[in-house]
Amino acid sequence: MKRPQPTLPFAPAVGFTRNRETAPAYWILDLLWLVLVDGHETGGAFSVMEQWMRQGSGPPVPHIHPIDEWFYVMEGEMTLELGDQTIIGRAGDSLWIPRGTVHRFKVTSPLCRALNGYTPAGFEQVIIGLAKPAERRELPPPMDPPDQITIDKVFNNYWCAEARDGWALSRLGIR
View 1 (cartoon, rainbow, N blue to C red):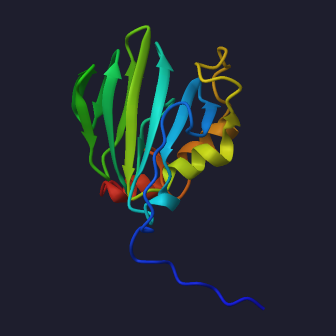
View 2: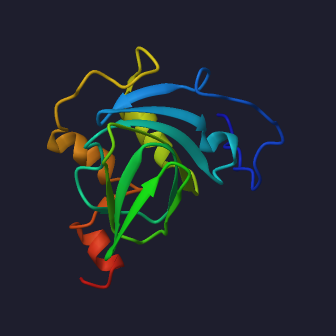
């Protein structure tokens, strides 16, 4: 029997380069996701994905997670609902979403391209595990709204919960 290997406390000492042409690409929730930095490559410290989103795109439910998230808007515009705040993010803006904050966003321009990062890493594994590998590096053909099973898998896991769920409510001190 093979002995389990301990997880290294630091990221592997191996540099790498990846760009939108070489990054693994996936289609889910009407978006193109390009995994630029996977948590396996950073010792779990962080992950970064590039998202291409059409107008109206965004999470179908308000949600909360125990990890920090950020966006850097490269093109287009998105409106972020962050607790009681509404923040407009335009090209060149960085948007910070602290862990434990209920949030959701909508793309308000015809196209929005943004870097999306998480620390610690992990949420990228949800996308990798559930999404369809992209056939091309472009927005997917328009997709039907996600069914409840997909919503549950994407927004109710170790890294994320719908804001109406017991875990999220207890985190907010409501339950």
